[in-house]
Length: 138
Figure 1 (cartoon, rainbow, N blue to C red):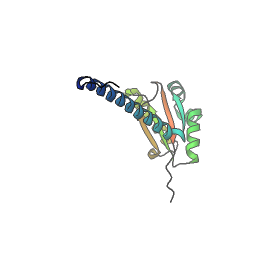
Figure 2 (figure 1 turned 30 degrees about the vertical axis):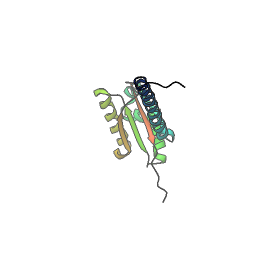
Figure 3 (figure 1 turned 180 degrees about the vertical axis):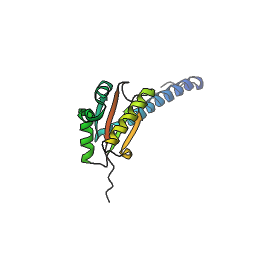
Figure 4 (figure 1 turned 120 degrees about the vertical axis):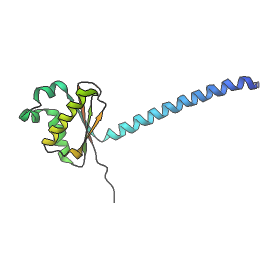
């Protein structure tokens, strides 16, 4: 096998490091994706669309929104769970998620059981996700 001169070996090292760094970046991204999917693997999630919310967000119509009824019933089965609200960014998203949180509290869900996070997949959707409580085996 021919020997590489010192001048030629340097670019090879740089290329190898670049490939190694790119591989590490891919591994890190994969691990993050797997961790986030594992966090939600045991959970239950639904989408609440802005159009549905606007039509029936007041009074008695609120409990007729199937998505809310489903999430409330599933949370009632285990009140140690958290309800995570992933809302669209911007001022409108913040106002919407705060109003939704107020409505959930008025329906009997304690505010300590609700977490709000920016990062909905669309500007007209709030994702409601039940996060299972971590149970300690004592």
